Every structure is written in C-alpha cells, then in structure tokens.
Amino acid sequence: MKRLIFLESSVELVPKEIATHKSIILDSKKRGKNPEEIILDDSKHHAAMRSLANREKRGRPDIIHCCLLLFLDSKASKDFEVYIHTINGEIIWVNNKVRLPRNYNRFLGLIEDLFSKGRIVANGETLLEITNLRLKDLTAKRKVFVFREGEKNLEMLKKLDNDSVVCIGAFPHGDFFPETINSLGNPIFISLGKETYTSLYVTSRFICEYERVRSTEDC
Ligand SMILES: C[S@@+](CC[C@H](N)C(=O)[O-])C[C@H]1O[C@@H](n2cnc3c(N)ncnc32)[C@H](O)[C@@H]1O
Image (cartoon, rainbow, N blue to C red; front, side):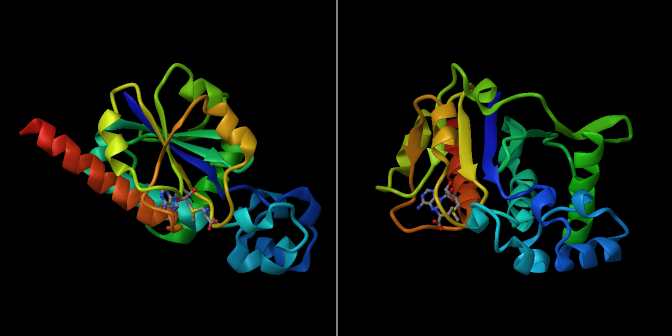
C-alpha cells in the first residue's frame, strides 16, 4: 500500500526547559494537566517559546490537524497508510478510517492522550499509535516523493506506484532538517513551483492531482 508521511510535523509536548514559564503554568492549570503533559502551542505559549531552538518550526499542531482532516476526508485516503513524523522524530500511525475531532481543542486533548498512553483505541479499534519505527523503516526500498519548493514538476506524480511514499512537510517555516532528507534515501522532489505554499494547500493540491490521475486511469 502507498504511504503518506507528514514530515517534521509541528506537534510535541511542552519541552522541559520552558515548563516553568508563566504562560505554560497558566495554561496547564486551566487545562487541569501538568505542564509537560500539554501540547506546545504557539498561540498560547508564544512568550515561553522565544528561547527554543528551531522555534520557527515548532508549536503549530493546528497544521497537522487541518492536513489530517482534509486528507482523511478524501477518497485518496483509502489508498494510503498515513503517518505523522513529528519534529522530534516520533512516528505516529494514523488509522485511515479514523474520524478525528474537528474541534481543535478536542484534537489537542486526543494527541495529549496519545503521548501519555502511546495508543488511542475506540470500540476495540486502534485509531492512533506511537510506533517504534524510524523514518528509514517507512521509506526503505520504496520510491519516495517529497513535496518541496522548486521547478514545477507535478507530472512526476504519474510515477507513483503501490510501493511509493509521499511526504509533505507539516511545519510553518524553514526547510527540512538535513537528517530528515538523509533518512529518505534518494527522494524525488515534487514541486508546485518556487513559491512557498502552506502544508494545507500542498495537501489539497496533492489530493486533487492524485485523484485526477487515478480517475483517468480508471476510465
Ligand atoms: C509551509 S511549507 C514549509 C515552510 C517553508 N519552506 C517556508 O520556509 O516558509 C510546508 C510544506 O509544504 C510543502 N511545500 C511548500 N511549498 C511548496 C511548493 N512550492 N512545492 C511543493 N511543496 C511545497 C513542503 O513539503 C513544505 O515542507
């Protein structure tokens, strides 16, 4: 089965080094959780995040929330195993039949539960799971396509086959870490052009392009 990986997704628990910051304590008290049990969120923890390394790529779980909602709603999702690769390198498996909460705060609660329990099960079915896999394990011996700014070449998607892996960055600013790209072997870069687009827009263009090519093949 094909795979879709959202790379370096901007989702993580509040890191230790800022867990005692005023804005984090305030938010965690409001939520009735310990500071290190809540998801880092730039819209609430902006002041605390100033000192963090790679700050521009962190604290934006809304990006993966929107991209997952969009992709899991699509017909294309039936053809893909879906994974979240987090900014800290964890690999989360997402059941492609899962109905995620559309409400952002409920989504945050679900992901916090996932980080504390390692797995979310509902009605006997696993919905989300933190795996022991590394990026390398998901991409080894497969054709890997990575969405990235560059010369427009969407037609490369025609080369997608059942063993392919498609990757889209799910962080707000900056480029992929070199170690992420290295883990992907020899990827083919797919581009919508030199301009930078949001992860949500890129996900929507990928879905459209994939469904367009597939429906031509079906005819
Ligand atoms: C918001 S961008 C990442 C940050 C962006 N590089 C910047 O510096 O603002 C999110 C992701 O969308 C994809 N992307 C953005 N623009 C693209 C383009 N023109 N063509 C293909 N993919 C693109 C890449 O996977 C990228 O990691």
